[in-house]
Length: 443
Image (cartoon, rainbow, N blue to C red; front, side):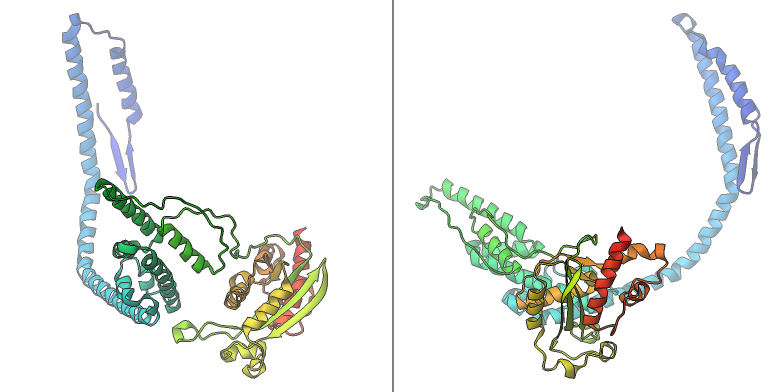
């Protein structure tokens, strides 16, 4: 058999493949009908040798063709490797430099975190240094160059607050096992794992006492008391952990803790409170400025599709208003200086809305953050549902060719008059109209 192949740039072919395939099929057909027995063993061996020889011949030809066809590529590959090797040396030096700079930057960031940590870690007392050095304390994301100071500062405060509560629980309930429990907690900062570890210690201790014939506790009679505990989420979590660490069984009969606000996704209701807020603005945590605070809340109550009440409250935010925000809203420091504090206004707002759904424009990512934060500070419980007209309007933008879905733009599209845009009372009023226009579109 003569195998004929051809190669060109990006192309290789077996020119007489079908011819050889047909020839082989013809030659091998005679073997399929043979029946080998002990009498023709010599013939079987001869056929086996012949077929093996044919197979080897084909395979050797394959290797030969592969070598011939691969040779140009292997030469080219060797040349390219030679070129890349020339780049590797300076690249390695640069990489070593950038890696060193990145490590130095992370060390600097860690130092900044430590400095900030020292200002907020007082509740931890003598355990502060141990907590900071524990492996799970620093989130690796905090060390990224893209992570803003506010993010890791918030993270530090949250972890300090949680650890302070957890360690306090351990110290109050751990008894002689306290040092071991604190050590285990520092390994993971996981209170559930620490509680499980304490139970294993208690079981080991109980087993050891039984082995040495320790006198059993005479007070084996159990009972129960029904208590109503009132406190914050953190306080509740702490007391529940303490009960677990004491090894007491308990049953949760009723949960009266505040619930997160639930988002409504369809405009299928006609009674609600549309609201909007204005804030002081902020120069940003990176510039050493505090978070923005509320300066105005505007609210419009709608019952069965009719406006029944309107309210507009200015409040003293307890900080200066950023100049560009003052120019936008026309609310100045002088206007709010003698107004009630945010805590009082949020109580009035809660009384006004009752249990009605809240409707607002882009409130999920903005207004609700300030409202719920102010409510928590004032001890006000808000569990209303809410509907965001901004998020709902997005689904109609492309079909209707809207440039955007900002409240001012939608008000113009729907023919809703805005007397003073960027004032809370005006934006709340406009949002009532926008809500009902979107409700019509949804049909």
